[in-house]
Length: 275
Image (cartoon, rainbow, N blue to C red; front, side, top):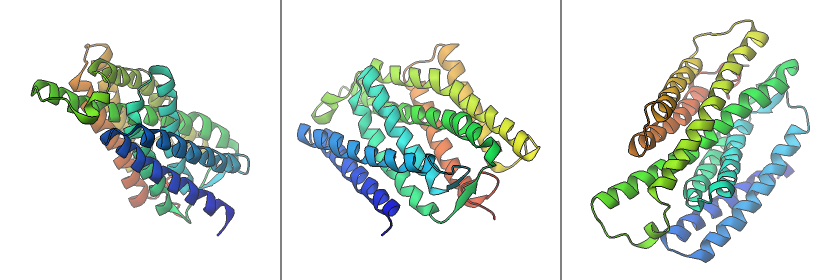
């Protein structure tokens, strides 16, 4: 087994163990399982960082297609860790760890494919385009987890059901709504910058701004939904259930369309290389 393959499997096992332990920790109210989750996921993130770092230190004008999904799973965990430091919402780990595991697992499906980026535009492509888009998606992943928790808690409160078990550890509705607010406030400008830079990159590299490819159309549709969420949240004063529900659907739409388009419609920096 090659060294890089070994690193991938170490990350896979760590994230799987982290997913199982975070579910067991919250549902079974076992602090020891949560501590184990933090340790094993942290180990996985460390190895994952080394893996990505080794690649970035080399020739990054062409990347294995699996790298893109792997990077997104890494970003989800890093955004979660950053939010945890800022707002101390450890409960979001129940969404971040399984999502990171699923995204990293999905990267195995793209093994053997390569995505080429023109060398002269590689830095711009990675830092501005991919960087801003992936951070916004990481923030949206946290809004997704917070939105699911918000829906559950609000339903429990409205039905006057007795809160028991892990629901005692869930954050307040205000805290969950605050995660949505932060993700919208930071995520939408980043997503906008990532989308615009993609068109600029396309104009520089391919001499055409908009090709009408399904990837571009779906990206614009996602931007409109994100813009609607941002507008309703900060202009119309939305809070609570409506933005929570919209953030859930927006995240599902973006991830679902990204996977579907990259599998079904090979083109330019699609995860599937037509050459």
